[in-house]
Length: 213
Image (cartoon, rainbow, N blue to C red; front, side):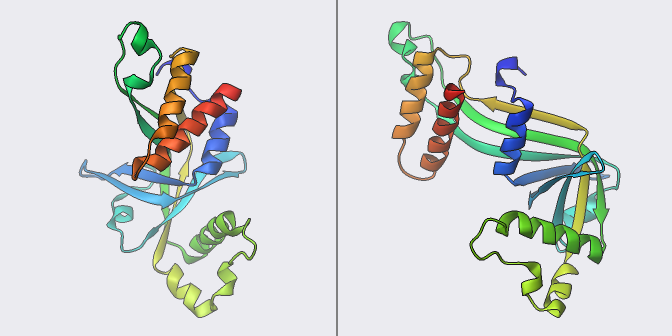
């Protein structure tokens, strides 16, 4: 992985706070891969960095996970197609090709399944607090009737992964000249229409922020 694409540690923390959902990828005992999109919580328990999440019990993915087996959480940021027509250097020599800009963090390590109501209650409560905390009128797990919550928790299974490896990459045209990068930012901002406009705008903002730092 080229050095110019690697996120630095402070950037990784900010990225994970801004993108609290990830695809969990594991491989079953039969060698067949499984993937599920899950809300996640990055935690530090006694100096041990971990990912906390939960499955719907009806999702068979969790049953195929062997405790202690390796897993990968893929945390994806915005991405966008980059047209070579946006590069200033296109007019100079024409030696340009399309590419794709994106940001992503890969977290990997051994996983443990928790089919335990108390463990799941704590995880669900903390995840809820993570997403409701800044709302004017935050909803809390305790707002719902206790019997209803208990029933819902029995339909959920927890998962925890100890983070042993972090790979973080922000491919944002760092290898291009300033003129080319400004051209890309302008081109992305001019993109219109779903589904790419929001992603393009977010990639342009990430590139602009990188320039400012």
